[in-house]
Length: 94
Image (tube, rainbow, N blue to C red; front, side):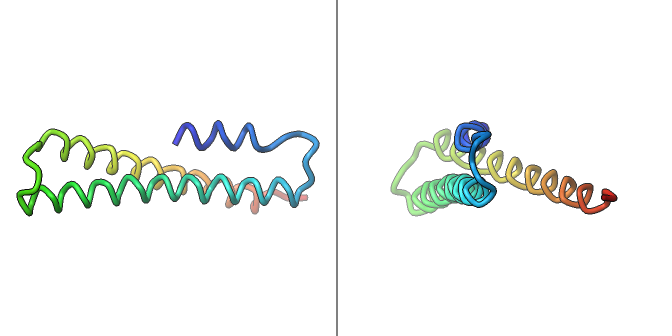
């Protein structure tokens, strides 16, 4: 997830229009969600392969599952922070 925030900072420049910034933010968010999905798919595939007896490296399966779990937890925390920030902005008086 750190790479997603770094990519977002690289993509958003001071001279970009609001529409460009919105498009770049949406693109970065989509990339981060796709990355999270790839972790989940890899974990599911290795777990299924272990259950079918196709692989016997339990450590690799557990490491992959833990990476997917941490990525998901991070994604949920980022979502909560974004929602909190949105609510705080909506409470501001103009």
